[in-house]
Length: 424
Image (cartoon, rainbow, N blue to C red; front, top):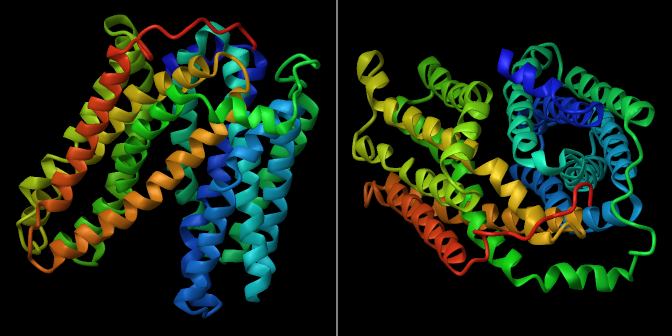
């Protein structure tokens, strides 16, 4: 933690505020969202289709509007979009505390999703602009704060939800209200580019959409998001299959997230420093993706095992899954800082937030399609046919994306990105 604090203090006040901002965003979000489905189906007694609609609207409004949020951030400046997003999420979370009809719940859910589309690209582009040549170090630290919020949020939310879910919504809304006020007062205004560099929206979008190398990179990297998301899908479902639904299964599922968050918080800066010392950025991307594919090999050891009894047998059965979670966290720590830096390089320092927005949309679509396929494969495994198939396919996805990144590197598209002006 001393190294983290030292690194944090080495950046200027703007970057420091953006890091605290991201920690608080994830804290407020994850104290509420993991418990929303249970509230909708339990306290409000909504049908399963209605719960799926409300959660789906939130995801669609965020993923579908990322590009628009990024374009607006590049045109209007980063601060207005960050403030607007936090304000909108304040309102959305407050509405969830009192809404009890389907139209109101859908509107509140859509507002929380749109809020993320407004501030996510702007925050990343602002960090990139302020960090300048230290972008890799800044994004390594960004991931520490990001994962810290994910780790702390559900714990705070569990304590609050045990009292009442509206209390959780109110506290989460208060977190975003405080963020809004803090950024209005302390976050400097930062225009994304010179005033004369403001072409029509169609030209701005066209510049990004015609960036072929960026598209290829985004498609290759979307595989990493499909794989890393399996800590929320495939790994918990496999824990449930092996350990049932008792206390041990709950503890084992929690351990997956503790391992993942712990690796990021404690190891991110050391991993990034080592990678910078040993490999080029493009080599780091290939190594991280290959490790992400390899992370799905340990679950093969327990894929053919039946439900284990409590005690040592159950503990042994979930060890390969914990190893998978740990390797995924290490792979993400290798990838993330260089991934964010490469996006800036491929953008040429122009319309960076727009590129981040489109990148998030591509990866979001990849996650949706990947989860549908993974769910189908896991369903097949549950019938007893091909129990190892899902894990093999996930590993192959990682190795295929590694080959795609290696191909981009061999053609020189990633190995020597053109210089990007500081604060572009």
